[in-house]
Amino acid sequence: MLAAVEFETKVQNGLIQVPDEYKQEFSEGDDIKVIILIKHKLHRQKDIIDELTENPVLVDGFLSREEVYNSQCFNACKVVV
View 1 (cartoon, helix red, strand yellow):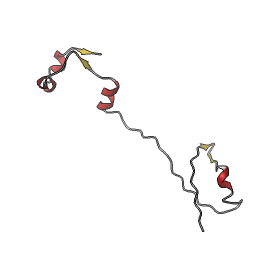
View 2: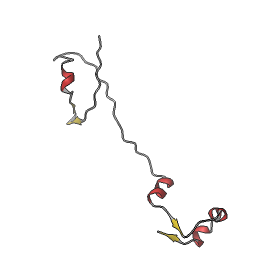
View 3: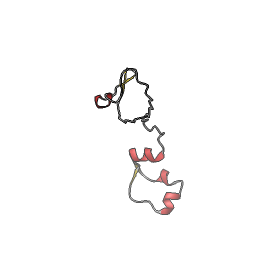
View 4: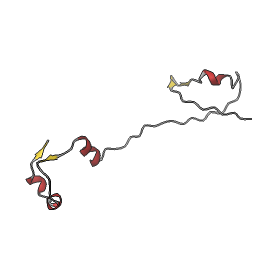
């Protein structure tokens, strides 16, 4: 018969500490099955949206639709950094 317990812990020196409240579930020499689920931190590359969110480009006034789509706009607009 299998009994399951679930807990979160940190690996320290390559060892996984079983919380005291679960130690009564098994005895020395018992065969146990261990499944390890690792929480990985999400590492993704920054994209242009991340870059603009962190470092917004400020312009004097508002841009018209034509100015936004005009490739020369950024040369003619005053960019404040």
